[in-house]
Image (cartoon, rainbow, N blue to C red; front, side, top):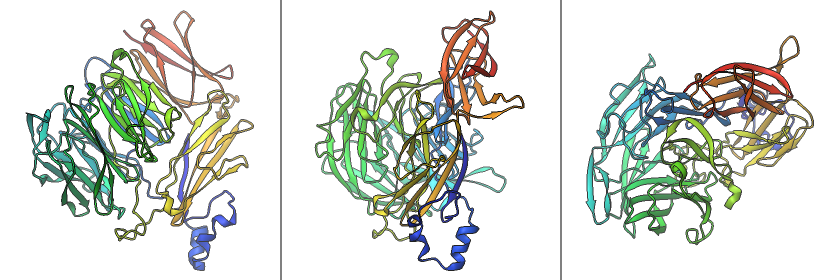
Length: 610
């Protein structure tokens, strides 16, 4: 699947025909020369917002087993594709913060103690940051945060804790940090990473163990960070991150104590809610707090303070992409809470229950993907991910799926990202920088597994606030058009279709087109189908990954054939990443034969080892 074009409709010059009413808001206010430039000269690419398009997670690389190392998920084509580094020794099993630039190019990642760059090299001066564990980093989630510097697309801030103290008191036991520090990161003219202001102290107080996250200020440029004091306390420190650096804003005292052990916090994608969860211990249980949040002045208003008294210590929280639902993973259970319900906690819906916990495959650390899905690690050391396919839907219509993705390497936590695609609150008193919610078009598609010419096109666009009066316009490449946000469409015949989405609001418009090869692909001189694939790892231990590129199969099958010519495994495969299980196969050399419509289209070799 190729990314054919991403062009800003500041250029209304596109090769699909739209109704004239779609353009009228742009035409009446334009001078003739400006309109000429827009219609005929503008081909400038938009400033993409792909800062969360690279995920890395895993640990234990460089051992004798391929089950340890780093897994990389990339979302650049809408749906994820993954690869591995099994010889890479950084541990991302606890704290895991990553940032890419606006174009989706990996820049930096950290486990809270060591900072690596896009070349997977240690950044000079970026080691032993938190002084917790120089080998494995901070073993708790969300104990560091690397984010873009406001107003600077290729400069970044890293926030990390200052030292550690261990405590046991009436509010539970755990780890506390003695303050918050930061560094600024940039690349010099030789593309070498540099650090400024190492160990600069922002906050000197005993603070929560984890829960570092951020939310865009209502001006659309700066960031808020909220850092609770250590328990027992009612205080929440508020920091404002600006182009000049972090500024201490204030401390707000809640009407109730905030209790925590292992902490996690999340802002809703629209920035209207803040949730905080603390795991104190098996005897005391977990604590869940939900607040409304004012992105303009940073004010919190408590709407929930609960102690579920769970004996399970693998908990996580995550808001749905549309900010309506709060998900709570509870080791053996998964819950959904509807924030439009005043009694959302009491009326929570249990979506899944895993009992007994086979191989400790739990609902654990939750994270939103830029593909509109929600992902969950499995808690223990397992090469699996759970997936919530449609987290914007209520109840079981969200489609929670256990062990949906099988990986090569083990994982415990997933990376966490703030919402980079959140703009200003237009018209508010804080909308003072002249930044508008100009749309950013992005979408993925899901192919029907039975009717291969049928697709669901899923809108993932950004900056389409309700106040901005958004509109969607799809051209599906076969003469069909749709104004739905996420249409379902079946093509009548095989072919090459250019599918385009234009998103528009009162501030501007943007378009994204992709080419779909439906049941057809390039052919060689003999008229045979040619497809592009990747197979890794090779040799394989218990499975391998087959990536199918730029082709949407009709009915494609993979056959594994042993040296005796016997087919020992047969499996249907699709575009993007397919995981093929080899755990039950004897060691040896196998032929990988790929069939489409009964004809061989690709043959490879793979070694399965003990």
